[in-house]
Length: 155
Image (cartoon, rainbow, N blue to C red; front, side, top):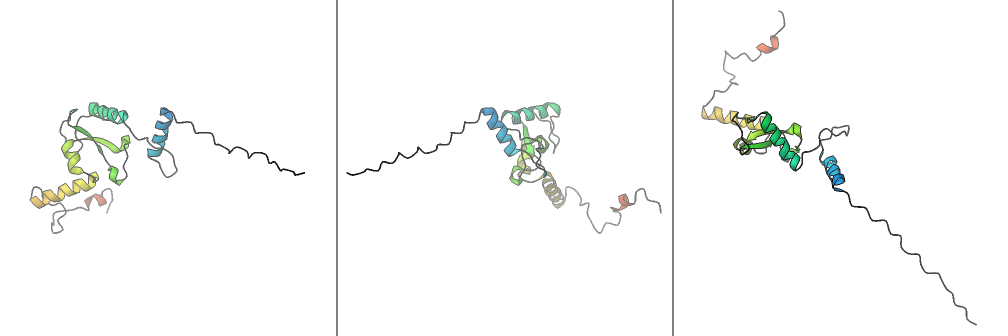
């Protein structure tokens, strides 16, 4: 007589439960956490303005003070642009603390420079063209840049 060895069938493979897709609100909150300004301790400072919130913030700024931060021209809905104080190319975000209104020309001319870099470039160009005099002339005996350091001291 021959004996047949019968083995039980292998157990079915363990299937991990499928992850439930995130709701629209959960995706939005996740995106805000990913794009938020984070201080060194890891706390969220300000969430980024995305989509319609970006547009709403622009409209709110336009109602509050419709003037270009650089040249001072009056802005309209058609001429106002949101400009990044710290350019996005240098790590700046769409947070309220990093956005202000400027006219399209100033925003384009500023490009991806910081406001300080841009204004320094304008100053150098104006000095070169003779529009203004250079304030940092080392040969000017009338220039007393150190007067402010002596304020409040008695001799």
